[in-house]
Image (cartoon, rainbow, N blue to C red; front, side):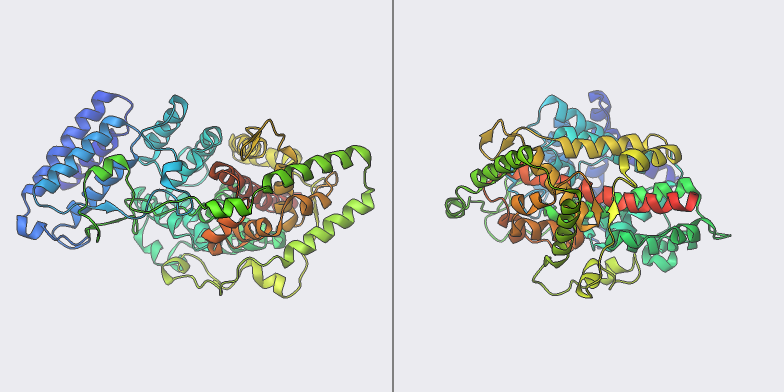
Length: 545
C-alpha cells in the first residue's frame, strides 16, 4: 500500500513536466495538499529549526528543496509561481525554508548574463520544455549552454538518446558509466547528478560504495576509462580484445560502442563543467541551505525574481589595459589569410610545424597549484587515482602522431558507430558540426567577421595535443592566433579540467563576451570528445580486422 502511494506521489511530481496546463495544475494541487499535510503534522517548535537529513523532518526538507528548484528552474511559469507561493505559505507557518547558495548556474559568469528561465524566446522555451519533460529538471549546464540554443538542442537530443532511449546497455549501467567517467576528473557535479539518476532507475546502492562493489563487467571498463580520459593514444586492440573475449563477463561490440560514447561524452562534459565554473544544482549538496543569510532577512520573493547576493562589477580597468586585443587578433587573421593566398608551405615544412607545435603543447603548464588529491567520495568510483595526463609529459615521453587521413571521424569513425549503435553516429556528427561551424560572424563588438580560421585553430590545437595531425593544415597558424594565457586555459580544461580556475577563465580573451567564451568551451569539449573517440574507434576497428 505504501509503495502504491509512493508511486502515485512520484507520478504527481512527474505531472509538472506535462505540456498540458490542466495536467500541471492537477499535479500541483495534489502536491500542495500533500505538502501542507506534512507541514501540519509537525509541531511548530520543532519545525522552526529543521536540520536537513534529520528525522522526522528530512522527508519534508527534501520536498522543500525540490520546490525551491522548481520555483527557479521549471520552464513553466505556472509551476514556478505556484511553487514560490507554496514556499511563502509554508514560511508564514513558521517553517524555515531553504534558499539557494551561490549566485546562479556559474561561478564565472554573472547570473544576470545567463538566460533567465522566465525570459527566453519561443524556440529556447521549446528546448527547455523538452529537457524538463525528459529529465524533470533543467540543469545548470543547459542554462549556460543556452547562450547557443541551436547547439543546446543538438546536445540534449544526443544526451537523451544515450541515457534514456533504446540501446545496448541497461539504464542503470549507463548512469554508472557516467559516474565512472566524471569521477576520473573529480567532477562531483556530474557524479552527484548521475548518482541520483542511477538510484532512480533502480541501481544497486552497494555499487556506489566503490568500483570494486560493481559487477565484474563494469570493473573491467575501468582500464579503458582511465586510458581514454588521460592518454587515449595508448589504447590498443588488445584492450578491446580483453573486454570482448572475457568468457563470463564479456561485452558485445554494440555494448562497448555505447560505453565508449558515454565515457568520452562525460570526460569532455567534465571539461565543460569545470571550464564554465558550473555550480551545484539547487537541489543537490552545496546548492542550498536552510540557514538564514547573515545579512538582511531572507525574503522568499528572492526565489521568484532571481536576486543574488553577490556583487557583480565589470573590470573596467582590465578592459582598458586589454584595449586592442580583439583588433590585434583580427589583424593577425587577415595577415595569415594573405600569406595563405601568396604561398603554400611544403609537406615537409607542414609536418615539421606540426611536430613543433605538438612538442610545445606538451610543455604548456596546466596549473601552478599542487596536485589535486581526489576525495574518497569521488575516487571510490575509479581505480589508480595517480594516473593522469601530467605524469607522462614530466617524463618526457612523446605522443605518437595519428594521421587523420589514415583514420578520421568522417571516413571511418562515423560509419562504425552508426553500424553498431544506429542513429548515434548521425547525432554525434551533427553535434560536432554544430560546435565547429557555429558562428554569429562577430568578435566582441565587431560584426561581419569570418571566424572560421580561429575556430579551426582552436579545434586543431586540441587534436594536436592528442597527437592528431591534419596534413592540409599549417600548424604555424596556431602560435599566431592563440596566445599563452589561452593555451594554458585550453590545456588545463582539456587535460586536467579539475584545475581550471576563475583567474584562468578571466585571463584569456578579456574583451570578449561570456557567450563567446562559452562557445570556446563547446569547441574544446567537442574536439576533446572526438579525439578520444577516434583513438577508441581505431582500436575497435583494428580488433575487428
